[in-house]
Image 1 (cartoon, rainbow, N blue to C red):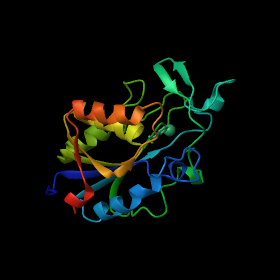
Image 2: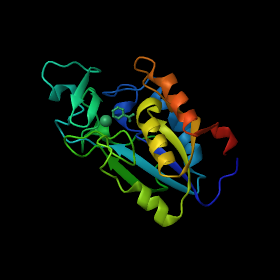
Image 3: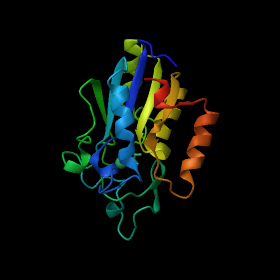
Length: 208
Ligand code: VGL
Ligand code: ZN
């Protein structure tokens, strides 16, 4: 598969809190960094996302007295997994991984910034109405094909991939450059949902 000028490498949430030792560590999460760095050196365009929550965010279990991490809660927009406190704005845990070669990134989208709304997707927050502006940015620049990498396969990569398809983009997940959390089978469900939505899969070695 040849990369062309309208292709984007979209790197999701490669932040300290999702890496080993972090507050919401994704198993083997640091394994995504090497393939992402190889792709980021060559991709025509690179865009990054950062999960970026204010203190006391509605997705944190501590914001819901008596609830434990990984419980679910009913929020005004629907069911929400309650996570350990993670990626708080301005903290070390929210910083991009130091090993990530981020210098060619043209845009960093921060998401989950509204106190009461989570946002796994880089396009549309969990209320399914609040937009991040990414679709407009891509459209205005004529960027049509997205290659997704990063964390976590079954949450932020999944929701971003599905919303990108709904917005009309071609989407391919770089399968060795993602890792999942896998809550109650969520990882295999995520791959099935992405396949149904027309999301492709490719190995990073086929791109660089
Ligand atoms: C994510 C859970 C909570 C992710 C972000 O990046 O997949 N997961 N916030
Ligand atoms: Zn989050």
